[in-house]
Amino acid sequence: MTSTPFTRRGFLGAAAGAAAVPLLASCGSSTSSSSGSSGGAAASGAIKFWDMPWGAQAYSDASKKVTEAYVPEGKNLKAAWQGIQWNNFYQTFASAIASKTGPAVSTGGGFQAYQFAEQGAIAMADDVVATMKTNGMFDDLLPGVLEGFKTKDGYVALPWQTDMRVYWYRKSLLEKAGVAVPTDWPSLLEAGKALKKIGVIGFCTGSGAGNFLGNHWAVSMLINNGGGVWTPEGDIDVVNDRNQEAVEFMLEMVSAGAIDPGAVGFTTDNMDAQWKNSKTGYGMFGAYLPQRVGDTSGDIVAAPPLTGPNGDKTALQFVNNIMMYKNTPDQASSEAFVIYYLQQLKGYWQQALVGGLPVFKSITELPEFTKDPNAVQIVKDYSPIAKTFAARGTASTANTAVLDGGQALNKFAQSILTGKTDAKTILNDFATGLKAAVK
Image (cartoon, rainbow, N blue to C red; front, side, top):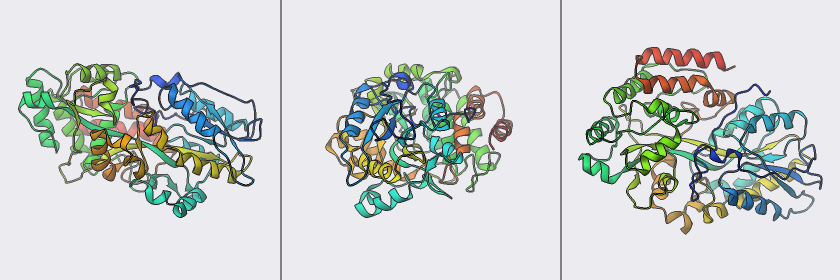
């Protein structure tokens, strides 16, 4: 079980809210209140809820407070909170599940539920979805956030926030370069060339150590051209005309100098500095880039999604989720707590504790959310067209986690950013590496 590649998705960018916690830097910042209990139950008899540090310490404090404030109805059990560190988190869950000392409910890596569902450890959330349909929560969900969790066995998890990949630009640099905000691939290339001429990076990305934004851009461009990694049925389909067209365009961006030659080694710290110091005019990042780099000038603005050469208009998102486990002292209590917890989410955005986007429309209407025009624009423009790594299908699988956490995707993105191999060879190598890793 522990050999399964873990997925980091769900915390890349999620900690970059008001506190501007660096990407991945929160992975060791949680506290732990382990009770030494077993079977999904704390020593008190309450169900165990394991949560990850989705922001600074204030987030974990709030999550614990929400959990401890839960007053169950009838015979349902209370819940006990425990913080789990990102460092080696997959191994932490895997070992606990194997020894039947794991949680009854948890958050975790973006594709974790699919991995443990394949091993028979996940309790499906169909009854929770049914309850949401009766209490108004289902109709409050933003489009596309729930569908990906539906598998042949049921809903493996429920969404609670999204990690959107957003195009950003610096108004002052585009004006200096004399180009409009890109809306499609030709205007993206034009802007990249013009920005290079004024001595800044035309498209900011990177695939250095711990930086997966280059991976995300590469996959998002495949999807933006109607391609992707999988067939609608979930089989590998990498080498096709749409994907080749997308890779050829990305290679053209590299050869034109729109992408810095050093991008293959850029870390997120490098990219932060490039945005903060006005060294780049356009690129892809998470949903709260200005807050992340401490820019309050209003010069960094969310750009519209791009339209691909075949008319496709898409965005890439990762849907972070809450899941239930079969090893629980009482399944009805797990389900009741999940409903309660989802109903409390608005407090995290009211207090600016998380860096992801909400999954409920009602939260996007809160004054604390609408005061950020970029966030409002992203929800309006990106959310309705967003797809996941599962595209061209909708449901993810354990193989999606292999894609996200494996070396095949890293090599794919790095080959593009290096720009020394042709598109067909890059795609063939990607397919070979992926086929060797998936089941």
